[in-house]
Length: 367
Image (cartoon, rainbow, N blue to C red):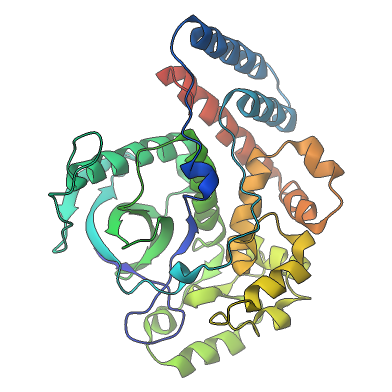
């Protein structure tokens, strides 16, 4: 099985993953953990008891609010609101990325046997733990999948069929892609630069799931001939023929009933002509666009395209206090309120928040 990159400009193997930079300065510098001992035990018991009270709440919306409040109080609950980075060249420059190994996901939702590729990292590189690069990769993928699969309900990620560990050069990223042998299947990519799981990363995992949710085959019509074409004219014709919104990098034409089309109509239709004029090679073109529409976005990554926008807004929908969302007057808060109109997403929010709590309680550590 081999993943296919989402094409930006059809030039050889140039491609794109929907991804997010997982290691902003805040995350890199925030590796604090609760100290051991009686104080830590007391904090954990308080967390456990507070969450137990939430399980008694029957109303789905209020139950979700309860778990959000408890998790926000006791866990490291990071939401990116930085607006200083505007170089996201990793979205386009991926031809140097090489898969090292991958796991297929079994029907029982477990990782199957490891499958190696022809590409290997220098296994002489070691890390503070003393593990080799390769062994660290195995442990990282298994750990991330354990957290992700316990956090996200399986019925919402049935299209996700494999997890890759990929040499991404100097890029620190996670990503979602499609498989070229079966375009209905999605895959989860983890950069070889990513270290062990830290609770601050949960927002990134939710963001990546946001892509699975909003770009699945039930949301987007995939044309295999167009998707695999290396002819720029084919892409242009497909985009012109799309009556809704043609997803960036060739993921297809979104369905009229899709979350992304409703989101696009409400939040992007009025600025999209301006957006497509951005010269991404220019030093300040995107930055100028972003600050001209700053009230629409929580962070500078969110404005890079509608697909990243909806995935980031979905993350805030899951993790942000609903009272703050309701009181916010800027459009960025309206984007979060967008998700509350869907009963199934309100229920999903509650399940994810409760799953995070259950995972922490079952393992006796803060996720």
